Image (cartoon, rainbow, N blue to C red; front, side):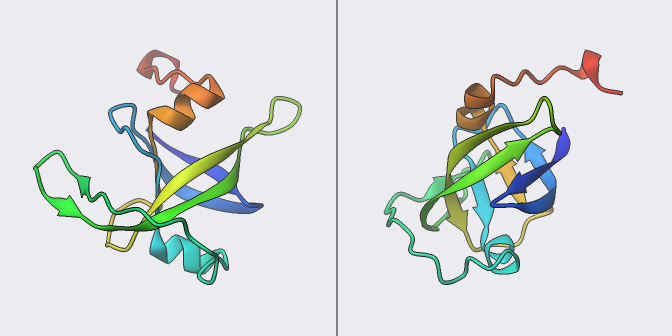
Length: 112
């Protein structure tokens, strides 16, 4: 499922909701577009391993405010994103940690 989220008050489209992902990932191009290229990142020394077994080094982590939905049902939480500098079809991958924090359930039955 692909959705739109507000991340630090910027509307970010092409967010992949992936309940198979154990991490929340934001890509470096998005960080630059929302003006966070100079933000202080927390170091991470563990590479990400994809489904095919390939490894991608992460640049670090950052906590960002993420909002879902519109008022009056809007919910905002702090999400700890892994930052990755690679090309990808989506801007953000929203994994299980955030889905659980939002109390979100991915169900094709409820899609319009």
